[in-house]
Amino acid sequence: MAKKPAAKKEKPKASKGVWKTYETKGDSLTRKNKSCPKCGQGYFMAAHKDRVTCGKCGYSEFGSKKE
Image (cartoon, rainbow, N blue to C red):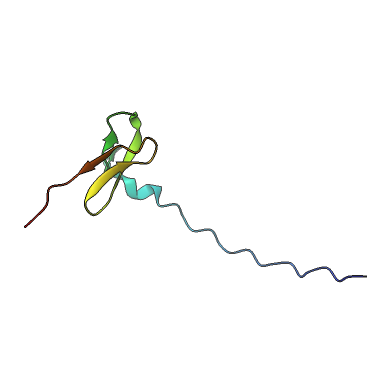
């Protein structure tokens, strides 16, 4: 008969980092990132080096070039 493979060790899961998108002030939470104007308040815009982009609809806003 064939041998059963040894059980693999589980790796600890890394935190998602959702806490990075909010800021606490006293008892209230505020959002750090901008919301998408097309999708509404529930969808954040991802902040890249030269633009902000919505992950759902793909809407992008580009920053100005610095010379």
